[in-house]
Length: 343
Ligand SMILES: Cc1cc2nc3c(=O)[nH]c(=O)nc-3n(C[C@H](O)[C@H](O)[C@H](O)COP(=O)(O)O)c2cc1C
Image (tube, rainbow, N blue to C red; front, side, top):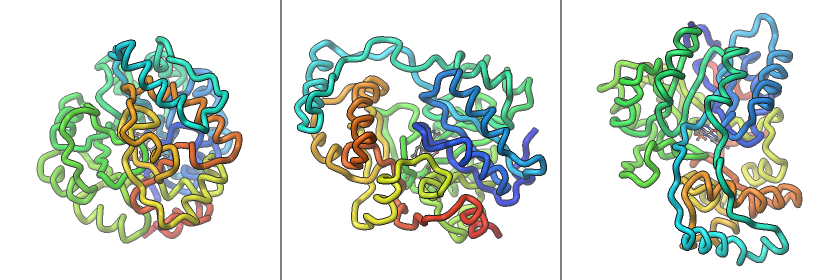
């Protein structure tokens, strides 16, 4: 079974669903000696199979890194009354940018089925599987165990870490409040202590027996050292990889990260219905206080707005997920990033 010790540096290139984890990015990370991850949350089984094969064709035979596939654990039942749905839809329709877009209320199935998504993974197994937003069914964990796949799950609190440990996870991705993208809380409407990454690592080191992977705000070698000295076995970095040459982030998104140093990165639910940290833009500002639907209905409903914005290369209506320390992003290759991170 995979061991973090085998890596050149104890780093996981974070899973980032939505086209950012290209096979080139994942393979370059593995070739550089760290964990390369696919964020497959929104991908079809066919796409998953193609991406894994494409990455494998780019991985050198002597690569020191490892492959991780990541999925969301999303409940199947959502509640949204007809009245709430209408209000949320009208809020999006009233944006000038929506123009003549056809915006509709999505119907079920609202999200890809996890069991189907995992079929190509069982056929061509990665070294690691990770899950965000909760603990998957025991049948999935047993299957992974029987195939010697290491399993990690995100936790943002002591309670969530305990659930990961009780479920039989192999490691915890301890996600602090600085992290870009979706906050991994199991209950988006529950209490959130919003712990910083370092505080979370220090707290969990005392209470959990599992290896901890620190996620959130890690952008340079000093951050990595600080986390490992506090008890982390490895770190997971997302934002720092967004501006790498191999990342699939649209050019205008990369430019916002590299040039717009004055924009805050803040939490919004407006894109997806769940809290996620992004660079502030027009969509977030205009949607403040507007009615929203729960994840993933809101996510599906805003998809055509985000797609139009990408087509027009307009960053103001895209979800520009970015961690609090995005100002340290550099225009570089994955190999250069890993080189400057390595001890
Ligand atoms: C663009 C983007 C997309 C993300 N998508 C996912 C995802 O699909 N699954 C997941 O577990 N975490 C996802 N995350 C969160 C990362 O796994 C990680 O917690 C975070 O990037 C760490 O903080 P940093 O961005 O400051 O490095 C995403 C983060 C970003 C920036």
